[in-house]
Image: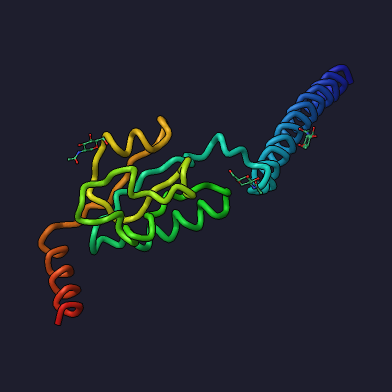
Amino acid sequence: MECLSSVKILQKKTFLVLLVICTASFLLHMNHINWTMEVFHRSPASHSLAHKHTNVAFLKTHKTASSTLQNILFRFAEHNNLTMALPRSNCAPLFCYPKVFSSHFVHPVTLRANMITSHMRFNKTALQRLMPYDTKYITILREPASMFESLFTYYSRHSG
Ligand SMILES: *[C@@H]1O[C@H](CO)[C@@H](O)[C@H](O)[C@H]1NC(C)=O
Ligand SMILES: *[C@@H]1O[C@H](CO)[C@@H](O)[C@H](O)[C@H]1NC(C)=O
Ligand SMILES: *[C@@H]1O[C@H](CO)[C@@H](O)[C@H](O)[C@H]1NC(C)=O
């Protein structure tokens, strides 16, 4: 009889312990779900721009898919209301290429720029003076032989 009751007490204790573990795990799980949902429900508008790098100088190179990336950056700039430095009309579309880049080639309406993505001959000093101090400088490099082939095909079509 005594043995039976101690078994019952043990069962009760085990049950209570299990109940506590289950409840705790359930609560933690709920919290996790809630947290996860919150992450998914953040709309782009409520996203702080502080987490995005909005100042970018993209050195556009020839025959490297750079127009594709430029297009992506244009869309990003439009979506985030950023200012894109564009060439003056007498310099367009390549910032007076093949002259070395100067801030005089930029259309004044497109200053204070967040981004610059058109073809240019790189001048670090001139760009650093033009762009915000935290600008990210990026470019695309391509394996030279295949790039030369691509350039050759492109220009032989355009000059032929
Ligand atoms: C779940 O998320 C909502 C909205 O962010 C918050 O108000 C609520 O306190 C959260 N609940 C728990 C259990 O974390
Ligand atoms: C976009 O930026 C311009 C200039 O920086 C500002 O005048 C304008 O209010 C902004 N528009 C929106 C919708 O944030
Ligand atoms: C680069 O820009 C700086 C500042 O505008 C200028 O002084 C320098 O002469 C330029 N370099 C070349 C190679 O044009």
